[in-house]
Image (tube, rainbow, N blue to C red; front, side, top):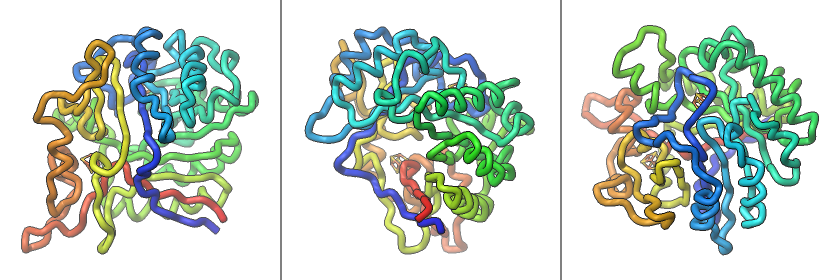
Length: 339
Ligand code: SF4
Ligand code: SF4
């Protein structure tokens, strides 16, 4: 029997999403990396050391997620992981597309990495590869098997779009077979390439699913997969009547660091020069106004201000002009696990 709970924003923990580089060997159709906004550099080890130190907070737990681009393309990744351990980060996760470059599994140990988090967007090559690239399914699945065989704990991220939502329910048996412990369902964002597809109205490009489809499929499939003993996490997206809206930018500590020095508090802002913090001479400083922090303060009937600005299509209005429901903060999650 699966048990569901909304994961409220933690006020006691800091979550640091650190993009070490933006380079990647893949070219996913929904990639959110935007080199114009995020830079193209690969951060040197010394810079990473100084930037990590800026977030070292011994009073509160800080969870570190290392990402890219593809972070295993960074030759110093093993060193960076060890550095983070020495700095006493509460947890270290590596998000990877599964290619696991530079023999990373042999260069770190399960006691140094809490999770290797893989990305796969379908239960078969026929679903996944048109989205993530020819051959990427086989490589990713093999990478998960190798990680599990070496004793690493693994999770898997599935980005839901209209191109793959109908195949989500077939992920359960695959996850079970692979030994994956946590399954993260993401909603495709209108950022990076997805945003440019939308602007260009490309036929067949993966797009967001409707509210009806999301609510009709995701909670049900999440419960089915949780019943297999896998923890499932997915964004709430739509608030139910009576649920209270909160903006993580106001009440939580999430930081998204990019190699050009920009630091965002809200992922939906990442396609714009709206970052509220920036590294200058390796020191974390406030970015000039107007920035995302000014938006966090606004209160609108639709809920999330950034969603209203960049994805207004996912809100419906009644005859009185009032929104029929509110959009939750994109960082508000539902967690489902078996009892
Ligand atoms: S693996 Fe990640 S960074 Fe690389 S192209 Fe795909 S979404 Fe972008
Ligand atoms: S997604 Fe919306 S609610 Fe969440 S931090 Fe960004 S602006 Fe705030």
